[in-house]
Length: 106
Image 1 (cartoon, helix red, strand yellow):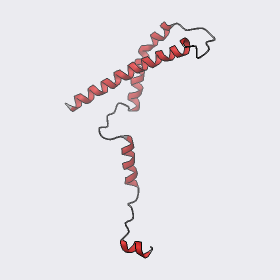
Image 2 (tube, one colour):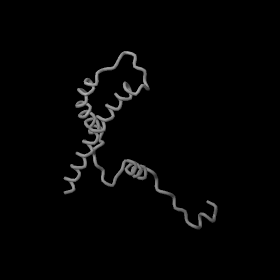
Image 3 (cartoon, helix red, strand yellow):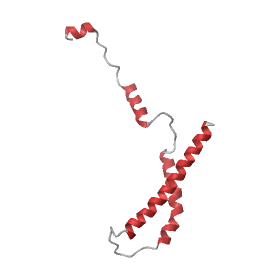
Image 4 (cartoon, one colour):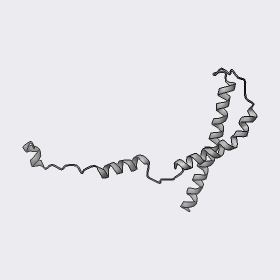
């Protein structure tokens, strides 16, 4: 049951990443050519060209994330926690001083 849940969660991540990549791609077109914030000097490319590229954006974005290991689930373990544990394993144990050492000024 847990593995099925994990697969559904990863599928949800992949789907939302693909949809957000499409949205970001189209938003970039709108900001670049429709908003007037950036001066267009060579004319507007047709929107149909951008729409033809959308399937590639939708496939390549999750693929790049998969290659980078974004979809690897680490239940209860974050990268920060793993790094801190590695540092703790490499650092020497703290020096324990007795009450006698503290009062003697050592």
